Amino acid sequence: MESPPPPKPCAVCGRAITWRKKWARDWEAVRYCSDACRGRRTQARDSPLEALILELLARRAGGATVCPSEVARAVGDGDWRVRMEPVREAARRLVARGVLDIVQGGRVVDPSTARGPIRLRLRP
Image 1: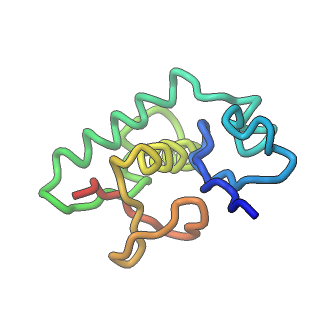
Image 2: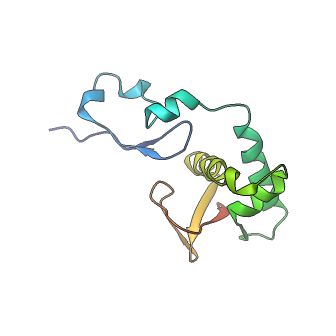
């Protein structure tokens, strides 16, 4: 029996999409983890968040981290708390591209399952 293909990241939220038998014929076309992500799609507002994360990390010493709330506050308009999930989504997309690590307590964690406070760090 053939083993299922490895998980791949959702194009919107960056969470892992695990293979399901019903997707066997069109696994290559699956891009979204849920109907909510399919409805939202990646929008023009998402790439500035990714750029801001990378910019804030570039200002730090090598190996330093940044908190997602710092990124949300750096955007500046309105309540930063409503931007926390879009910042975390942008971070997960950067992890999927191999640019970033999400860490908790100094250890790299799976971005799809990380709960609680996280830090963002450029990959060495």
